Length: 470
Image: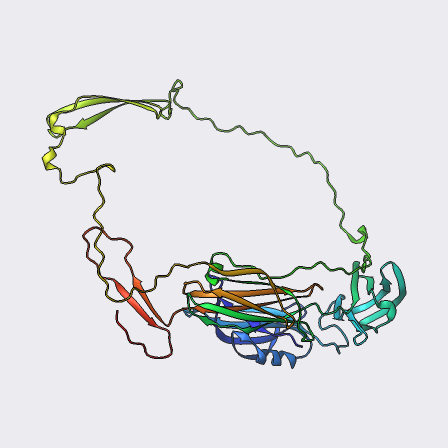
């Protein structure tokens, strides 16, 4: 088929990483136990063309694909997945089941016919019904016996609004009801958005002008309204941004027929009653304890205690009573000796209040003979947000903006729609950077009088050699 087989790997942070390894394919028995190995090979993350080719060469049935790899520390990593391979040409279901339903094509048009396949492993009497809303078009009984049956519905004018296929049967006390809506093919509702003028590398602080072209499915210019925006992509590390989609309510007026449902014939019956179970009452153990006469050491309303403070002279000992009421009032009673106070002359630290503290004088700016470098000021996280752009008769629109002065990666998004509710979108990434960048490694803080050495990283992002002074 046209479906791709893709193998991806993620680290513990959920970010995509590259990985290599081997894969093994095993055929399975009916009880999902391994029968034998049928294929093997090597893989690298991405689309798996070799694996898809090997699976296409196998017979219809159930298989288990096992992937073996290693992480960056050499620890083995193993993952497995069960798959069912089938073909539209199969004469019977690829596995043992009585509910093998495949919608090969549920769209009806003059060029396409609707096709639905039903397969069973036992002999089943199936009630076949074809409805169009509340009108019954066809009803009959069919018999399937360990086979697949393909139901085809060529296009008819009476199928303009759509039809509903219902397949109902009972086997081994199990009720099955399948319903498939076959609807007419709809007109394409997608617009194509093309970035005619776009640069994936831009300079901070420069003026940019990009051009967008919007066309319909046939490639004709479309007069549409356009929403365009560009934001700092690093913000997605904080909270990922949702993709842009124009959710338009479907105006299909086809009412699908309600499917049949089973009654309680095959359900379970539940009963509830009360049964008296004799029990013996066992009293809990009781132990002796002290009678504190309502006294508690944890009463927060009032606390008494005695604290001894030792003065500088070990011979002088003063007793201080500390009495506290709650947390709002504290009384301290006692006598302090002269020796308990340190001499002011012995203090080697000076404390100043905010009123007496004076800031140090600002250092004198050095005289710079050369021209001052450009100082970056615009660090907007959104470069632009333009919700009301319109295309001209050629389907084109212009976007002019000033690049913010951040060195980062930007996500550029476009969403377009026309008066017929057709919509389209596009997304691209660009990086803003200068060819020569100086990144100093500044210390977190400095004290008055400190001497420090600042390491600086100089990056040359251009294609050639750049000389200069630092």
